[in-house]
Length: 410
Image 1 (cartoon, one colour):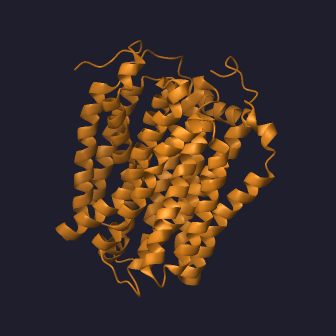
Image 2: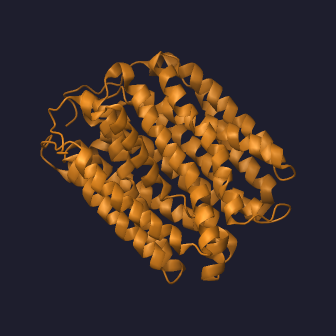
């Protein structure tokens, strides 16, 4: 099977089987950021550090992801995405192998940083799909890829917990992950289009143009802030969950903790439904409903310190709310500046993972200071802020396109 060319039928590029493979690739790559979460207790014991310090390994990987999103993903607006992805996936394989071989906390943290940087390749795939998708079905197609991405985030915990339990250690998970990305590299080399350059690469100018986009697009600023708050509250919960479940009253092991990802995965399936709703013009209503749902989830999560049923209900509601909101936001931002979708993705996702990295740090700090109750208050503050900001924004002023024209941006 030979690679497609840039002028090939985009319907062939985004055929159901290829769209499925792109969604699978998104899930495999983003999962690299989250294998560590159910393994924090095991890593703390292995490296002889406090459990709360092991929680910062999640932050390190997410910081790397943010760096990759800001420094590498914008290149896909100019370079051949097939070649760019090949280099990023190759680096990802090497980083995962280093994680598997890490002799101490410092080396593992560095491996996590580089794994995060190279895993940002998932956003190159997402912006590519948004670029090729027809306007009338962009929400559905991006929603499909996001479903894969979100399932990867959630099922990573289940897979990592099961592998660690069966193998008796955490290193096997990173060996398997490296092999999986290597296979993904081979497959994507076959199905991705060989593209002609879309302009001269002026790297510094390309990065500077990110500020132009942020300044010119008020809707992007709004949705990027909401993304940071959404992924922040998501990260507070999933980073802190291991702290709760590994101690009283649950005393769960890695495999049991990982199973909670299956509950969250049911919520991720809402992403495609939200994409279809936004294609039909219901994006604003969906934003209200999903933000309220996210806030309500923290009520159940708070009681989860005492009852498993409440905790499971909170997991499901949180994931439906946060994942649905991400798709609703992307349906808005991908209508802006079509020639700069990778950079729009950079601003949006970069903001989101700044929030996620902050959330994982907040989880460790708030749990150390106030236990599960303190963590619950910190997590609930973010969807509450989203609702308040959404209420005070001047929506008529923000509904229209930004002032950035097609000729204003390289």
